[in-house]
View (tube, rainbow, N blue to C red):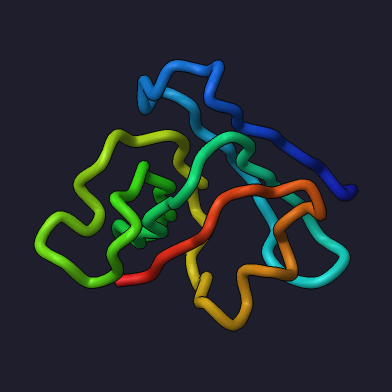
Length: 98
């Protein structure tokens, strides 16, 4: 156990193959950051959370349909009120929830 970090930037292709296992939500746990990406849809699919490119409009017909960036396998429960506990200080993305 420890405090792990991952960074996703626009220089990485949005292939959807990136999967993070054992990500721990909450204060003093794992952190992520997205750089050079304006907006991300946070989508719960079963017991996983997907981060997808967003058009920046929450709850529209296209919500959650953008290119898949990364999946947090076995991690759910992010909300607009709780996600900040796991976001690094250098994040540039806005997170949207459906």
